Amino acid sequence: MSNPGLNTVIMAAGKGTRMKSALPKVLHKLAGRSLVQHVLDAAAPLNAVRTVTITGHGADRVEQALTCSGSHFARQMPQLGTGHAVQKAVPQLDMTAAVTLVLNGDVPLIRTDTAAALVQACGGQQLALLTVTLDDATGYGRIVRNRQGQIQGIVEHKDATPEQREIREIYTGILAAPTAALARWVMALDNRNAQGEYYLTDIVAMAVAEGLPVVSAQPSSETEVLGVNSPLQLADLERRWQRQQAETLLESGVRLADPARFDLRGTLRCGQDVEIDVGCIFEGEVELGDNVRIGAHCVVRHAQIAAGAVIQPFTHIDGEGGRVVVGPGAQVGPYARLRPGATLGADVHIGNFVEVKNSSLAAGAKANHLAYLGDATVGERVNFGAGSITANYDGANKHRTVIEPDAHIGSNCVLVAPVIIGAGATIGGGSTIAKPAPAGQLTVARARQMSLAGWQRPLKQPKG
Ligand code: UD1
Ligand code: CA
Image (tube, rainbow, N blue to C red; front, side):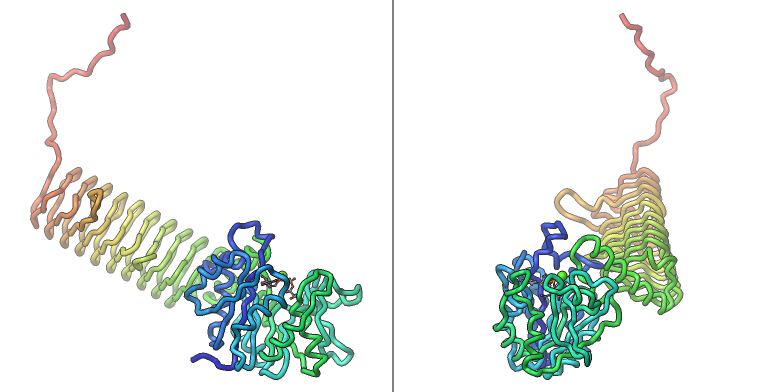
């Protein structure tokens, strides 16, 4: 249900010169999601009836990246200031919505409840500013209050007097305003200031002049209102965000070896007594069952790992486009690679340098060393020997290999798909199998060994 009382405006037209990047600033990623997507996601639960993102620099790319977001777009070209930006959004606002919330596309960690409190404080009757008090307020717009503590205006750093520069309470760039008044105010702005820009912040003095109350609200932490202007600031916010996520997991009982060496770029759901060693990266949607252990330096993406499974260090699991499933009690790695569509049953063992793609291994199956299983259906308790592979690709099409329960594939075998290995069959090491191997029998397909009794090693010819 949308909130008919609310518009949201997201400012994202700025250039981001200090990122020194060809990518528009708001599309840079924090924890795997673009900055502006974080802002949209934080605002989403407020269910604004209308969301307008203001684009300018790299507008095509930004709008394309947000096509599925439900946001409308207003283009601001050239960028003549934050007030000018909101002017461009006005024609797209729902004028019947009492409140308009203004957010910044490069301030990604704003929390939903903070934004909601600001909207509440505005209530369509007052101008509500999100402010914080900083030790070093250099560069920010200062909140000017009278003796009674009432807000009188915002003065930009470049326009501030030496006394005003002493003020440590600053405007975060986020506000909630009565919609009709906001529209009227931004149309009345001028650019007579140090930067020759249309300042959105000048609406505060306008509200005061009209006798409209101006109130402030504060975020729960400074992190919420930090902006990204440079790679250094982006990296700093990334670490703050990761720390928060790590602490949430620790509080829920997950044992992270080191919250400073943990990265989650998506969502991670964990059962009880989960242990995660250092240097792991989780991406997309990952689910870990009770007692799962993840060794050091694993990358796990779009996967469901069932209770009691152990993922040894340096394992790469990527279920993008086909979620990887690891069954209860399974052991994977070290140095294993599970690709999309890998589905491991209970107690399956996948060892070092084994790659599994689009294949299912039923309970108890093992591939412990140096193997490739692609497009294979592997039965219970199958043992797949070291160095063996499924040759699933004929250069044009992929074919399936079926290995029935209890078959043993020796070392260094090539199973040329499509092919079926019958239940309980044994394949001799070094075999290339291109025809069905019958159940219960030994099949060997390699050159017969021979020895030449009178054979002599060639001797080196004397130089003539
Ligand atoms: C603004 C505030 C300042 C506040 C600071 C907080 C004004 C005049 N000043 O300053 O009081 O302390 O944010 O970070 O608003 N943008 C556009 N179009 C423009 C200009 C900016 O879309 O023409 C966007 C930027 O992409 C950015 C946001 O608006 O997302 C803020 O712009 P920025 O240039 O960073 O504002 P500041 O000068 O830092
Ligand atoms: Ca800024």
